[in-house]
Image (cartoon, rainbow, N blue to C red; front, top):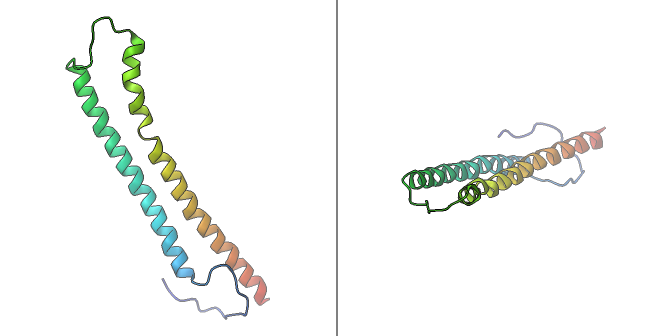
Length: 113
């Protein structure tokens, strides 16, 4: 990150180190994708393992209805939901920090005029 060449004013805004805020925002964005990737990978592995066991007959019982079979699949659809929530939260934090940084830059420019 390069240093700003703009004139400094006496205006004290929310953030004092622009580069640190950008690094934190970028780290949150990267971490969001990493967390989502981990949850997707673990879900795919878990579903694959379950399907392998289901096809070989490990989960079959005599007299099972379609609702019993559906009950086996429901937890695997719910497994990636925490990863999606973490992803959305981290992306919200990333873009929120960038928006606040833009607001501060606008305020600093307005204080110079």
